[in-house]
Amino acid sequence: MLNVVIFGPPGSGKGTQSERLVKKYGLAHLSTGDLLRAEIAAQTPLGMEAKKLMDQGILVPDEVVIGMVDHFYEKNKNASGFLFDGFPRTVAQAQALDKLLEQKNSGIHIVLALEVDEEELTKRLLNRAKSSGRTDDSDEKIIRQRFEVYKRDTTPVADYYRAQNKFHSIYGMGTIEEVFDRLCQSIDNYIQR
Image (cartoon, rainbow, N blue to C red; front, top):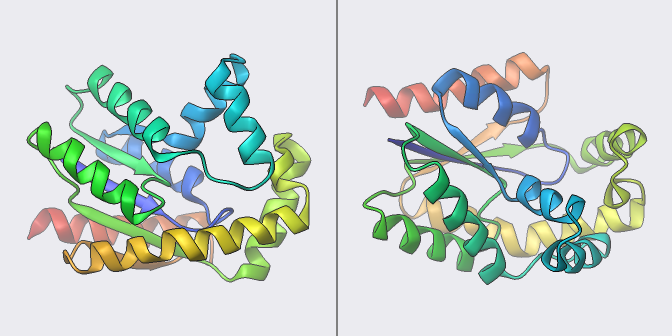
């Protein structure tokens, strides 16, 4: 089993690259954003509360997210591995994920962080808003707030995984193919060791 975490700030290309990595390595794609959006689309109580928080640029509480992750893992436990897309976002989530995977005799093997310049990210998100309908992508003030939340809460996750020798910083600028090649190189190096 190969368990990969990919993260980066909003607009860094996690979703695009995740689809490609899932296909290449045969992983189950676990995107907490997708899980949350499905709840929102179904207008469940969880989804409506999550939408209210997301529209303000606030993260959804950990216990809710971990519960969704556990449920997804169980539904896909025969997969050859998992790609955790944009999760964990905080050290508390990383610790909870490690604990959850340990109970399943598994763990995180490699963490890939897409590094992209903030001005480029802002352009990407405002452009994405034109076709995605995502309200959190269309307001530059909310976008900047999301970057601050990311820096404050998610950057320490890099240190958490760096201490476990699992962290790899990936230059996220360039073509989709160039970034994909960099990601694959890190995964292949891990597999081959």
